[in-house]
Image 1 (tube, rainbow, N blue to C red):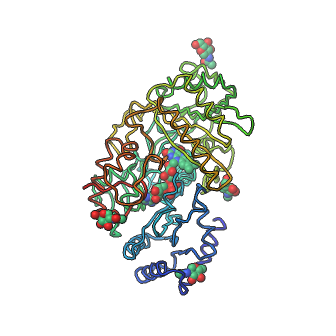
Image 2: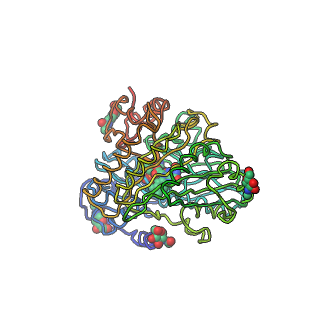
Length: 521
Ligand SMILES: Cc1cc2nc3c(=O)[nH]c(=O)nc-3n(C[C@H](O)[C@H](O)[C@H](O)COP(=O)(O)OP(=O)(O)OC[C@H]3O[C@@H](n4cnc5c(N)ncnc54)[C@H](O)[C@@H]3O)c2cc1C
Ligand SMILES: *[C@@H]1O[C@H](CO)[C@@H](O)[C@H](O)[C@H]1NC(C)=O
Ligand SMILES: *[C@@H]1O[C@H](CO)[C@@H](O)[C@H](O)[C@H]1NC(C)=O
Ligand SMILES: *[C@@H]1O[C@H](CO)[C@@H](O)[C@H](O)[C@H]1NC(C)=O
Ligand SMILES: *[C@@H]1O[C@H](CO)[C@@H](O)[C@H](O)[C@H]1NC(C)=O
């Protein structure tokens, strides 16, 4: 337990007497009258509390909004399902919005900032993980992180794993709601492809399972913005088998010319490689001055190093992989390694709920369907050199299992025909509006530069890399057609079905944010 959670537990005897505002007083009053049994366990932190800035800061994984005025009236930290149900009912009764936070990694801060008065429901205490290894399945509460899940699986079995993202502090609640891509996705698909049941609390405070929510809603929440439909309490997932030994490597290329040649070549093979082999590329400016381009080939292979060398020798000999570049380890060590730790670091690092890379950032994403010519990369390097802060492209290989799942199996539609995904990211340490503006402007310019090279009509994007530049419904009721501008980019032909399901399940649009699924008339 870290100091902060200890501090929270010690501060349970919050006095509800003095009221700074009417709204938070009425909310607490409502909660107190409705949840008699467990209310002592619920932590409330209001904006006049000394704890408030510290807790809020610990929740925000992108500090870009530290000075934002759109902060929660109250932070509620429930320990039990009934408190979440009541928090929904009380918010509705008083006319407040709710926002729910699991791991806090939302790219646009939508889990913790909101333009209208709202209650923040923090699921940090809702995070138990129950693994049934005989059934190869697990129930995971939404506040658990990927790292906690991976760690818990490894304590139960050396030959099981789960296909999900590479950053251990990402929350299960938000991650599966938008898809969930990682090193095992070429072999097994997305995290959301492995959900077999879920508990979802609706706008009336009722908890559903798969059967009572129905197959339509169950379809929608697996990658289609679960937060538009209610609050996920837990997911039931199917685990996958992993070999007891896997191999990882990282090769850095510091010559710009060589980087161009290798990445250009990589585009032709990465999506066709053996499904057990995942090779991603991180292309970044390496500062501070002068800016130099560096390409990092970062890979996980589900097998031993001899077999990997043989595969690489026949499919990507240009990279020149040697036995001594290959590191054999267990799958759980590979999750640490891929996250940027040393594979010999203690596995307990996976339990750290703060991202290693916490700093202000702006990101965008694209899908590539045709290899980009070498001249295209030359232009990307020119752009990267112009940015004075740390900027990078993360290019992740698709193909394999991703090609075998149909576009409408779940709302995530980016399947066959996509060679790879690009995530653009720029990070900065100094906070402030002018500073942010400058980096965001650069990011938009890069995005414009990329338009000839990436998917078109629609220019698609990955919902988990949320980007309000694509359009926003401004946290209001907007028409379906207005919201389609961004909705089709994330969900293609599935967007309309999501809106139809939304309209039936949450007809008042209670669960909403700047990019929630709209109602359809
Ligand atoms: C450093 C970093 C690394 C990443 N790496 C990957 C990666 O490898 N692969 C990948 O696919 N993605 C990756 N992502 C993106 C990540 O999957 C999304 O940002 C995801 O939404 C984060 O989930 P969260 O619970 O941490 O975030 P939160 O900010 O808590 O939530 C994100 C959204 O989901 C909603 N939400 C959260 N919990 C619930 C719930 N219980 N019920 C309903 N709605 C809920 C929130 O309100 C918000 O709208 C990464 C992000 C970061 C910052
Ligand atoms: C807010 O929290 C502070 C500190 O715990 C407390 O003194 C104050 O009474 C609270 N305000 C309301 C409205 O409950
Ligand atoms: C790689 O392939 C070449 C020829 O195709 C062969 O001569 C060489 O021995 C192979 N190397 C390894 C390590 O398999
Ligand atoms: C968790 O990670 C953060 C960021 O890297 C670091 O500052 C902190 O010390 C880590 N905490 C633990 C307990 O490892
Ligand atoms: C949105 O529309 C629904 C249904 O017409 C209505 O009940 C609700 O009050 C509206 N919400 C907002 C924020 O305008």
